[in-house]
Length: 485
Image (tube, rainbow, N blue to C red; front, top):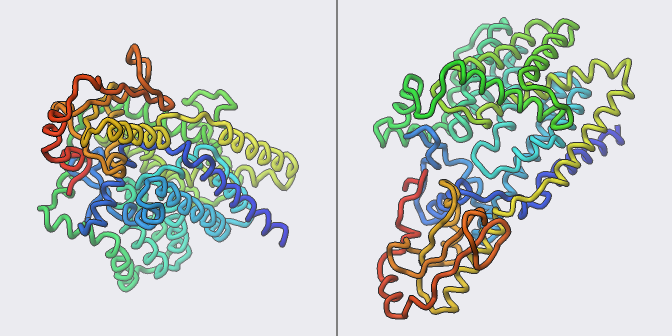
């Protein structure tokens, strides 16, 4: 038991290491992270926010909880956004501990141990856990949602409904798509054969209130803007939405990619059409072999079917992170299948898990660094600031030669350097950021994958520059995509 405890601690410590490995170099700082800085700055300026950033669904915002949670880390690092990478690391640690604690109680210690190895060391999960975005806690949420379903299933309605209500209140802060899983809890109520007690339902509603209160307050103040937008999204087709057959095909592709990354990764070449089928065969296999009973099998199935049904018919343009709520199911299926063979083929299974661990750790340690992230952006912003001071410019303007969207993710860094940054139309000295280098014939200075073209210094004189700087600081006053005061 003592050795097992040390083994579990070692796995968790290794998982933390992977989630913080080269945390600066691998911090893909872009618009979402830049916007997070502005939200935090806004909160610390005395504006108690009820919403975070606007989502891809117009008129719908993510809840503010993630941004409030980032504040201690930003303050600890002097408002530098690098502090933000440590909140996901803490969430990742909580998720690893939760995987073992919850799965041990729902299934067995062996299942919990195998699941912990998969969760802690898998390449795809590691980098999902490293993302500094509000959806990062999805894995943690689903782990505890599974436990709430288990409590209800076992007839422990009071604690099950309290946990379920608390988690339901957090969906707006993390990902509204998690609501799709709630029918699993209703099925668990049916299977529990316990009578519904109104008191337990009230407990669940009360537990939901704290997380949902900012949403209710915002809706009451803004004529139920988000509610109407959410209801509208269920019937309206978004621009760029696919036909039903194409949408289902993309759904299967993303599901298969997620399953493949969780299991064999890039080491086995299996067509995506087969990957989802293989997973379904695994699920049926553990049911037929009585590893899980009919009730648990149906709970798993409903969890999967509701995701497939919703995203096959909804007008939302599907992205990978919408389906992260299924990851806990894929982990459990793989763990249950592997555990089946440990009785007769224990050595082979241990070798498989060892090879799995080594390959995934190797992928993390050998990943190529995208040299257009936090380090490069901070360096290019600092250089512009220092160069402007060197030439006596009280303000500058910045233009971008890049693809749409890649010009975002600099404004908070300009604020951090206390810079006055205008639009090029202001006639302030223009620094041009280029990404990638191949978009232009020459650059004056390189910062990893980012390039910089300096102003034509000779065309600017002190009087004209001073005049161009008289107006407001556009970096502070211009609207920002996804951000509202």
